[in-house]
Image 1: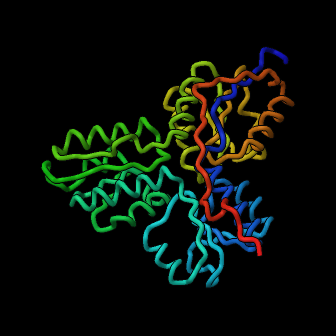
Image 2 (image 1 turned 60 degrees about the vertical axis):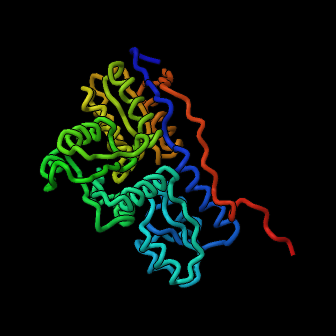
Image 3 (image 1 turned 45 degrees about the vertical axis):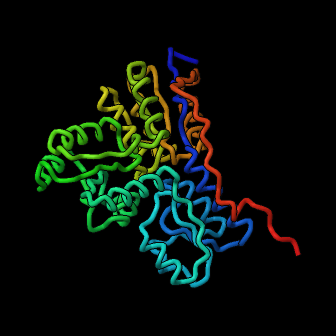
Length: 316
């Protein structure tokens, strides 16, 4: 330790239960079926995870239509539309569904609100795979709302039967602002029974909020296409802290440390702990050796892989 430099390490951080489940599904599929195993889209939004699987014979494709007929195909943690499942069935694919159970819950809510004849206001980013999947469960009744301005501009009467759902990886603060507009504008508005923002996204955002007043700089480990990691950076900045996204240690710029005594470190729910360790090692090389943990909660949720992968296999 030198010059009072120190690291405040957020807890919880890195993989959530949904990501662990998705990774376990590919591991088990490789173990039982061998390579190649095909995965529709990135299994989770992290370049390190994807590269590691590619080195083991996993092939990531943009569409289920690219998977050879009858091959093993894993659907990513972000979820898919019913049309994707129909396409996979038509090709005779051996499908393993890695959709996060919390995303699957949103899909169920979307179908329920659609059956009730409501217009579904889906709060999220239109180009995100999770939103594309949820939209596909009620495409004719869904309007995507990305911002407060979108909510204000909705061309619907005040008494229209509407319902809202949210992308699970958004900022809690951001969605609250949009929902407040919807509540003000519509008299017949329904929402999910509980908050759609996933527990892991919320915990990691809460961890950032707990750290910002104690840090001069916040570093969030996560890929550039990781929604929940990007939201963590935004939360830190919104609460007055300097913050940077660090896909891996190669993207870390020591110049960020100018005038910094305390560095806060966290990681998005799709970022593996090894990337955090590498960043901590680099910070230690630069004099930030004193590390303490800032814990906001303890996560003990476990999502199990499908029993088709974990159950006993037939022995001839």
